[in-house]
Image 1 (tube, rainbow, N blue to C red):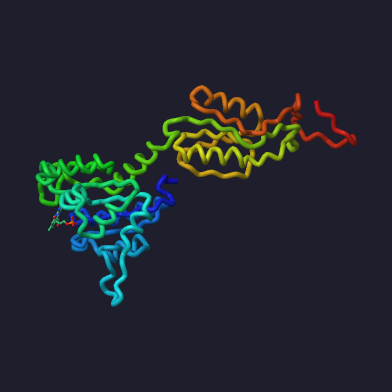
Image 2: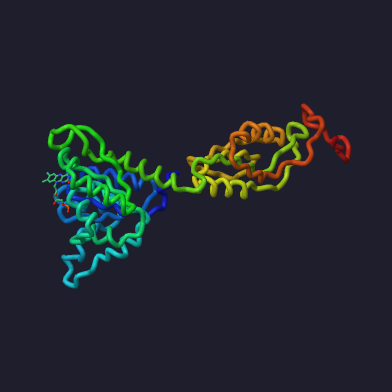
Length: 304
Ligand SMILES: Cc1cc2nc3c(=O)[nH]c(=O)nc-3n(C[C@H](O)[C@H](O)[C@H](O)COP(=O)(O)O)c2cc1C
């Protein structure tokens, strides 16, 4: 599960040739489980159509302050857009838009949204080699990062002009990975290893009977989920349970008996930063486990 699941992502698109990659970016965000809205500069509509982006994002696309076609013009509220977003990703970011962002210019809806937004802002520059190297572009990078915006560095390669060098927008997959890692890095348990035990243990009496308990495992699984959502790498050692967990930071180690649990826990204990032992481990186990089902000969079965 991606850390972007259920995040509201506002994608800003400007008039660079790499705008054609923005459609793939929308798809990747949607695939990661995010809600996506798109805001465009008017010039960028020459490079990729709002229809493509609204279809892929399943949301209206905004490129002007008002809905021009309506007799009763409706304000495309850039303040609300900025407040809606958990993340604002500007990709591609042209030299022009970055210079405007760096200087508080606010002459289109993308720029007005940028100035209103309170969320994390990422920008992925894309331009020709000489534009990228220009001192004014470097000054924009410096100013924008000094404001707390995050620069997703451009790559090196063949550019649309035919020149080879720096300025190529990071690939959509790289942009998604960059943002995911950046969010994970800010989580309080990032890099910590957490060992959690959950559920009951079953102690065999014979091949068909066991001593168990009613532990559901729910608490341990919820703790595992919470720790993983805080960025921890979790090893979840669990006795038999119906609970399920799918999280890329959680490794589940199923066990049956208290002894299995003890052995599995000891494999991970020394390399863990935190251990939360929430399993309902059996207090007793039969001294001898019968190889075959114990026949019901007497009214009482004595366990030893
Ligand atoms: C074919 C073509 C490709 C362009 N590619 C880029 C580019 O990759 N990066 C860039 O900064 N400007 C590029 N430009 C220039 C921008 O489109 C121009 O500066 C525009 O005013 C930017 O508008 P915006 O920042 O409001 O979207 C390109 C222009 C054309 C005609």
